[in-house]
Image 1: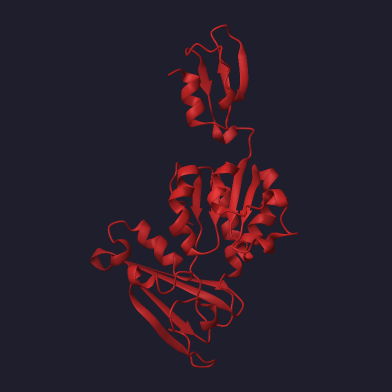
Image 2: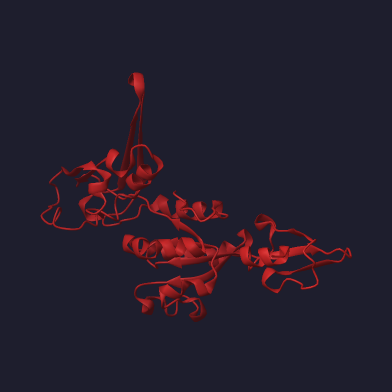
Amino acid sequence: MKNWELLTTAFPRQTLHCVCPQFRLTSGCASSWPTHCSGKCTAIWNMATSSSPLRIGVVGYGHLGQYLVEKICTDGAARGFTLAFVWNRNPAKLKGLVPDELILTDLSAFAERQCDVIVEVCHPQIVKEFGPHFLSQSHFMALFIRMSKHPSCFRLTGDLLSDWAEGEGRRVLFKGSVAELCPLAPNNVNTMAAAAVAAGTLGFTGVQGEIVSDTALSDYHVVEVEVTGPDGFSVHTVRRNPAKLGAVTGSATYSSFWNSLLLCKGHGGRIYLC
C-alpha cells in the first residue's frame, strides 16, 4: 500500500502536505490525495496546527448542553472549534435555538457528521448505549461531575428520598462500594465513578462511596475526598460548589466543562475524565 493510501485511511479529513519526487509541493484532503505520488513522498500531518477546526458534537441540551453550544458558537472559532451537531431526546426543544442543519434527530447517525470530539451531557444511559460507537469514530468525552447535597438536588432511582421533608437535617442515603451506588444515583456520583476508573487497583468495588441528604445545604453542593495510604498518610479535600435549590449542576461546573473542552485536542480513542 502506498503512503498516501495509508494516510487516506488514517486521516480522511485532515489537511496533508506532500512533497513528491519532482519537488512539487501539493496540499489537500487525504481522501483526494494526488495520484501522481509514487509512494516515495514525504507526508506531514499535524493535528495541532491543522487549519481545519475541531468539530464538536454535543449530546444533550439541558443547562450544560445549552451552555456549551452557546460557548462553541460564540467563542469556538477563536479557539479552533466548530459545532458539528446537537442532539436532544426531545428535538422540538432545539427548534429556533439551534440552526436546523446542526440538529441531529437520529443519534445513531452521528458518524455522518464526522466529529473529532463528542461531549455527552444528558443521561448515563446514552453512554451505556452509544459510548463504544462514539469512541470508534471520535474522541468521546465523558464529562460528569457529582452533584449533592440538598435532597432536591438528587436524581435517584427507587424511593430512597421519596419521604424527605424540609428541615429534617442530615440523612445518610447510602454507604458502600461505588459499584453498588452508581445504579442508585447515576446522575449524582460521577466524581466517584471517575475516581474508581482512575484508581485501577481498587476499581468500582474497592472504592467506597457515600451520599448524604442534608436540608441545611441550601446554597451549595459538597464533595469530600479522602485518600489513605501507608504509615498513617492521608489527604482529605472538600469542595463546595455554589448551587440553587433543586439544581443538579453547580454554578462552577459550567466553566469547568468549557475549560475541559479547551484542553481536549484528541485522546486516541480514550475516555477523557474531568
